[in-house]
Image 1 (tube, rainbow over the protein chains, first blue to last red):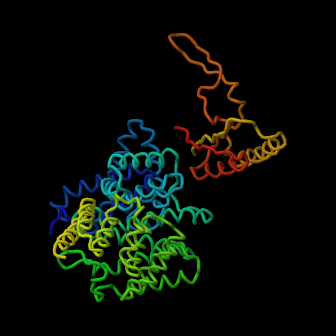
Image 2 (image 1 turned 180 degrees about the horizontal axis):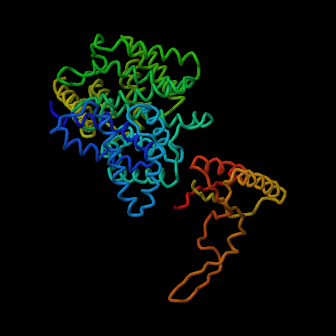
Image 3 (image 1 turned 60 degrees about the vertical axis):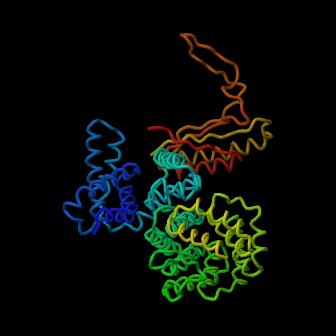
Length: 402
Length: 113
């Protein structure tokens, strides 16, 4: 077994959990993050020699906690007031292994999604602290330069500390507002996991699983919130098709060509049941509608008229260029590629690779080979995912033959 | 506990009629009494118009005075409340009440230390 790879995987799976527990112990994000990173650095040195511990997550949390306490004691001995305060907080908190971890992460999510932070900052912070994503990955997901993102995260952490944004699940009255921000964050984590913005693996499944796990937790916490249910259903229905999304060799397979027998029937059944459960409440929202669209997709052959109707509804409730882009795909099936292409004319999505993928496909179907090739090339330029790039190159090469 | 400065951001222009200001003052009294009862009131007060201000500078061992506010702007500090509360959420709750009473934006800033 490749141990370096092993530690990297533990890092991705356990970073958020470890940071959340240590934030609770020390009441300070920077102390928690430094300690967890230090623990992983120690793991890189030790595990190859001594072998990985039976519970890697427990080892990381315990090691991080002990290291942080050692360091804080040294600093407290030098009359460092901040260190003394953090130590006091840690002393008042019983040692934690893996017990109450679920709620620790939820607490931290609500802190990261606090309304006193700008929306883009909330998402970035949650991906960093709970998703365990690196700053370059987050920067890519947001199409902003890396230094900008780094600065955004540092500033946000300082604000949480200095302005004392609390670590807790908000009280009942504030929950609905706070929830909306949390849902947006979870969906972004899921999307980042579904098509990782860099690297060679098409899906960073741990992020998808993480987003689904947190969404389940939210639904159990707020069973009367249809959008939370809608988001969970949406993720499950997308995740269900994941096994069919790539060939054994890792190449991307578009929805229309997927082997349906590879879809996960349990996830589809669960996702559809959730869609029915929230539709009964008759309080439609963006996630519920997108979940309904994906429910239609998991019942092949896709009823494109129904999909288009759902996108029309989505465009009324939550208009955005990305919705228009996805609607165009359905419109092409119902009214042809020319009508679909016309709706893309004014979209300002030049930096978004999916925009060029959709355009390329429509142009190809209209026989505009040169324009299609240019669009594929632009899409390839913008895609960080190696598998997706390979798929797009195949499409580009296919143009020459048509 | 953390202390927060809640600044009332007042636009330049005519002040509301006396009866509205009186009603406002009454509601502010209620808020301040509530804060005092909860042990979170530190200080509060309204300020005169910015043209009553004097800016003081120390330069080369001399004290130089300038008539008028430090910065001319569309808004100025109309008054402020200092509270001592558990966290930002608690400070934002007080700021919400202050915003409702004054109908003006409230800037919330934590004190150092």
